[in-house]
Image 1 (cartoon, helix red, strand yellow):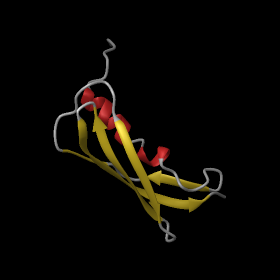
Image 2 (tube, helix red, strand yellow):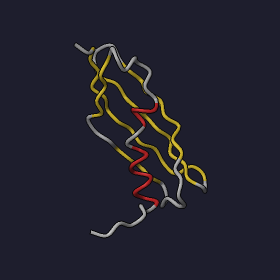
Image 3 (cartoon, helix red, strand yellow):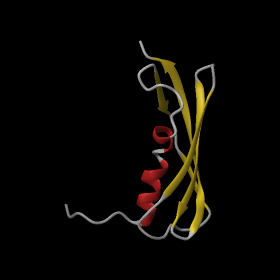
Length: 91
């Protein structure tokens, strides 16, 4: 298998899957929060080598939450991603 540099789309999708981790608002040692899905909506093709996330996590007391990220690249706004979260106290 030959290695290749990730494409702008591959970089964007990898970054989009990080929103939950970078915007955590609960203590990692006290709670687990697992993203059960990932939805990425782009309004244009990504360009360049870097991707910016502006992420927010919205936990709810009933064990479900949402991580939402605005996605940007070198040209500006690119799209959004959402992750549904399962939230529970650690044993």
